[in-house]
Length: 156
Image (tube, rainbow, N blue to C red; front, top):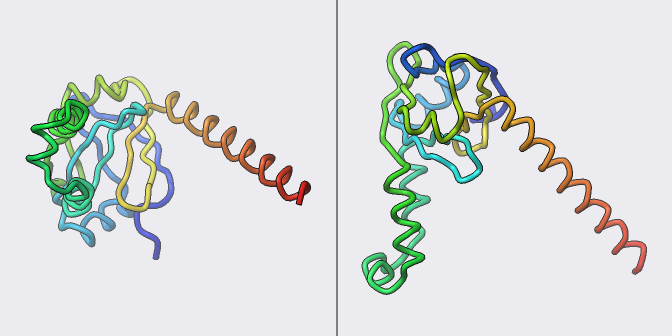
């Protein structure tokens, strides 16, 4: 069975907690026993990754200390990951608390719908309107890419 796929719509409770569907809870329990990392994405969503997936993403860098000493861009990237990432544990009720700063970043509020989408290595939590805009961008990109491929194929 596919892990971390599909979409769910839900709401945050008044304490900033989100309750995952049984399918998502099962995916996280299988992948990491519920130990996750929240990370604010530049696109405006909050990602939730199994802890080992997040660590793999961060280990892609080599010679970290040397790069941090010599590159302002690298230090900025480290700041972004450090400031906008936080460990959490999914509760026995299948919930996590989204910190206030992360809710602000994602425009996630208790009075609006949020969408949880699977991204194969974890999930992303989106404000419904932002997610609809992202889907339009994805569709526009795929349509343009398809048209370019067809035009290139016709020239050959």
